[in-house]
Length: 319
Image 1 (cartoon, rainbow, N blue to C red):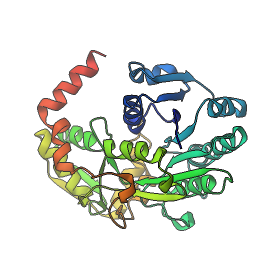
Image 2 (image 1 turned 120 degrees about the vertical axis):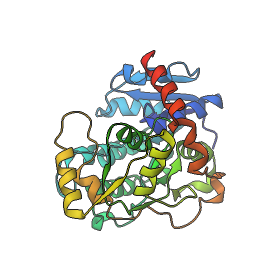
Image 3 (image 1 turned 90 degrees about the horizontal axis):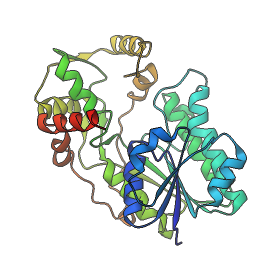
């Protein structure tokens, strides 16, 4: 393997921007398709990254994108979608249909290397998973594995944290404005993983033949409950608030209300269903990935302290 041009679908997102930066730092050409170029403007300063507007529902477009590359990384995913059985059309498109079409395009044009991001908590038999999110992620993995002619690798990260995350930053913002935090399923356990470690795992795997045909869990060294993460965000941001642990019936009601509010969805009933399972890895990160995962207490203060949050807000205001 000697990939020189990498197609990164979902490259403008939280994990994608870190992956694109690390690939660019290795002087690899990175192609990032997006429906609207404006959404990926933060990638434009990277010298070897090319952002292209593309309709990924079009088969000929997928063929052209795959043909221009030596390897493909699929990162796209959603946390919220419409309802259906076993999942709604939003999850079906983002987690199953698009990776399947992209994998098939790779086979048609002769690109073998395919790296796919799934999620920790997904099992090989995902039909019994408690949420649409997890069931659709399981079917997406299966779609990639069952595409003959691919040298695939699947990654299952735990919740991912970093300066632009929507988890610890959300908890910090909530505690800045609310007197207490009503929290559903506060005891659910996680092993948060640093976004830089996730991106590096993909980088290290691209040209490593030992990773072909394998599924990897990506998790940090710290086991934290959801309540622990809320407390950490409050303490570091300077606004610690008490937590009201909601019983399940109130947590489900809270989720149902939040998913109907205007603006970005903070939580949905499907998110609540996902929290029925602890989000823990079966062991340490595989040694062939070459990752020593960061501890959350070593990274989070760099972007959650009051001074760091102020600097980030100023930078956003002047973008």
